[in-house]
Image (tube, rainbow, N blue to C red):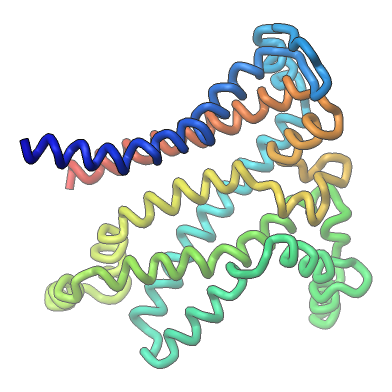
Length: 295
């Protein structure tokens, strides 16, 4: 009787949260998938069913594929910097930096994460400016004029410049999360590794990396999802230009939905984004669980 009462009390707290998730998360996802099979716009009284036509249009759209490649590049660089480099940075902070200096460095690294993306985008637009930007001036001062570019105005450099700004803003945040995970590792494990003759590098690979696996899995999922959901940085700095070279799926969706008023096609792009991020998250969770069982 007591257990039944406890379960009912638990449901009282769970049901409102489930209802909110259903209304504001799951219903919009299902409705978006449904509308991706229709041709419609904001003024359509009756959407027209077109089946897979929107997805066929996406498969034949070169800008869609360019946007997807940019998102993939964004994800790869973000994994290297926001997960790999941040983990190394966190380990160095905890193992090789004096305790009094650690707090100061954590704050310094974390400051970019609290700056608005819009502000960061505008700031880096000035830094990348080909005439008076800090980056080109530094290259000129070092005698590296051949590496100077109109960073946001050239097709080959625009998306990479945006990715660089994003890494600057995010590395400190993920590093601080890794610091928290490293601080929870029992010091006895490092002492045992030292007794066995392991140096700092060996301890990092044998103790630190395995013990922060849960945080690593979480950050991988968040980083890849964020890379496929990126929007603000591109809109602020290039709006997808020049010549659509820095388009990502989010900005291409926005252009089709709110500028071209092609809502059906935009819904199809949104569905593709959802499927990619959801599939990767499930895959990463399954791989993490398998490794945990093997250990």
